[in-house]
Length: 299
Image (tube, rainbow, N blue to C red; front, side):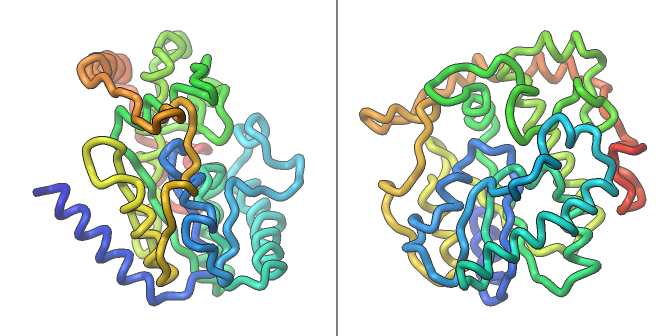
């Protein structure tokens, strides 16, 4: 019943924003939850008024994982204002499109600065799309790179937060580097999911009126990916296409018979309990700052 209410609210939120023209539609997620396919024009019959791209960044040495970890909010803001937004506008204009869409999780790098800049210094309208999958499905997928090879460490991934390189930048701060390194890659993936959700909540507390929709889908329990695609397509008043346009990762689905990989709920629940015990009482309350405009990482 609760999930049906969630579905209804999702559909209603999409219907409410579908009549609005957005200059930018941007994703907010951990990745590994369908964002590659949802960012593809092929899934929506490629409407000509939308420029679709994925994890697109300007060709610039200014943004990479290691450098970003050392950035202040002012650095992020200057990057957004001087480099990123002009890049997005140029891409949209070159494609003769009205809307720029990128649901990639590189947006995690600068989303606070981007929201502030677009809201206070421009007249552009933008929509944030919060995309999630069930906890253990997402953590299982995040545990692997391509070809079903497990990541050695969450901090080796692109476009992620890392509590080791700069502990003050995260909300859910582990008690020590050793404690975090002793977590399995599945447990570290749970940490990343929790961190992204905390920072999303922080963003909304500072920007309660920002336009956003929520897409939640599951391969096994709840309405699947194509329902998420349907909700996205309502933004453009078009129909999505078939599953042949869905980007499938080897670790997420058996590509030979297109069946889902199994999720071991009991095993994952036990790992989750041990992860939560490790992280107990380690929340960095000052990281979600009281005054928006001061980056949480600086407190």
